[in-house]
Amino acid sequence: AQTALYNSGNIRIHEEGQLGFHTNLINDAAFDENLGLAGFYGNPTLSVSGAFAPIFNDLEIANEGGVQLNTSLNVLNNTNFIIGDFISSKNNAQTYFNFLQDAFYVGDSDLSKIDGYALLTNQQNFTFPVGDASFIRPLTINSESPNLLVKCAYFFENPNNPSAFPGFNTDLKPRSIETISTLEFWRLEGSIPSTVTLSWNSRSSIGGFANDINEVTVVGWNKIANRWLPLGNTLTTGDLDNGLVSSEVFLPNDYEIITLGSLAVPEEILMLDNYLLTPNNDGINDVLVIEELELSPNNTIQIYDRNGLKVFELNNY
Image (cartoon, rainbow, N blue to C red; front, side, top):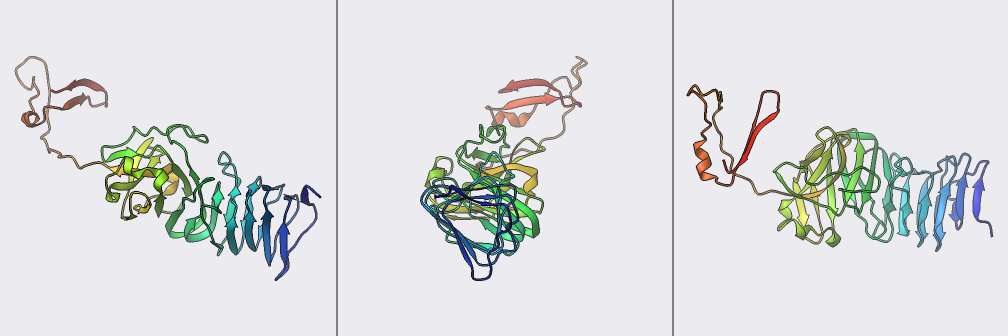
């Protein structure tokens, strides 16, 4: 009949012990050094809150309503996803589900995953079982060395106007990127050079911006450049409805968010000589003539001074 289990003293699960939560957990004291199994069960949504983040050994969830994390939750060993999500606010990256060193999981699916931030501690390679309320959308990270901390969340949102960040204009991109997804993105934080593998499903609408999976690539919003940059597609598998794409090595902390995009068709580039203009009507270098432009009638020319200021622009020069 109680609305919550309130811990203000010290609870500990001993070896081979089992503790099932059918009600909320308010954890305002130590709840660590646990062995055995803890589980969240039932149908209505349960919550974990309080001043202290509990540390479980083995954990499972079999609760259709899921578990709302208002404080972080740590797991030392196995997490068994059966049914229901661990949910946390994506507006607050300081509340998360933490896989500690040597922690792993089984059973993740569309029906059971992490809908919020997942944290990885002292591991080098890992697949984050993240997603939203409807689908699991895992991200796999392979780092050059163990990560002290690496954090990940999935957003089924338009990166141009996301709920938790300022917008990331998908028109700000180099010519090597044809299209950037406006349906979804991942937030990944990490300080070790890594590759990532992103997934897509039918909801990603890859066919709307790629004719072939080999055109799909990983792209990221670079914090310094303030624009999208390509992160590579070293390996693609699947089809336009379901598949995976892997990036080249990059530093996650250099990028605000990452998502899926498509590569542009390579353009023919002409190597031109340097041109000097001194338009002072002395008959020397007064006029700019680029003979190759006769082959490119639909062109645009821009001229900048040595300080980077644009002084001239014309279409179809």
